[in-house]
Image (cartoon, rainbow, N blue to C red; front, side):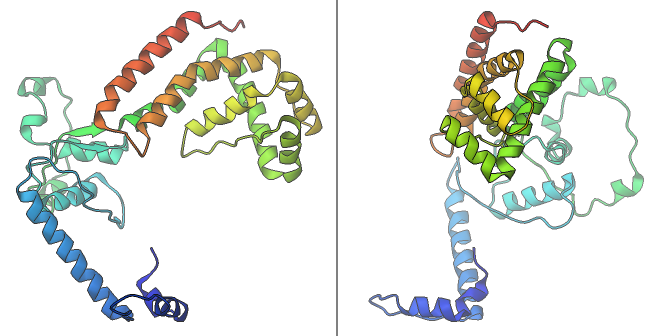
Length: 309
């Protein structure tokens, strides 16, 4: 992942000269090495194309490309279509999985074959939309783009449920709105203090033998893990920590709420860990994982102790 100019660095060249091999070492300049990379890339690309011609099913990493400028739906559609065409896969891709980004969703909605875009019988019920004539006429770059059926990432969808949907429900329900806000506010104060102050972090570690986990926005499970770590701490120790750090203490009702929150959300975190795993995460694990998640949540619903307002 270093720039090609690295091959001309004195330190790098000295390092390479120390490597012993039967054929000796060849020192290449930036231009020579760039040409070598281009030739090797073309060679692999050609081999892939030849291999794909005789295959019905394909599993390979085809591109990791930076898109410059705005990531609009039409730009994304053109890039995906170009990659499919480059490897002769336009008629072989059965489906494409993306996250729930609106630009991805719209790209696949706008460039679906007519046979997949919906029944003609439903057209009368659709809302009338007006289109800019100039946009319609400017189709020279988009002509012929056809994308395969679209599937939304199950992990990303579960992430939305676990953070956005649950958050909205808790804040819209009169019975949970107040306690949810107060409990998470006190947790946030603890996380903030422990992450910004070495003394505060050491205080927690000395008292309970573990450090607090601080959630980060790119992975929802980190919020659950951080709350679960707080719930593991006895109430008396939590009060001592809060008093020593001059923070508001978590009350008994708030502590009970956090415990029940973790009990409810734990099956969801386990499902996300399975679906987001880098090993043994196959397409066939999706439905069984969802089925087990639903059954676990139904079991919890039956025995959950309601919080009294």
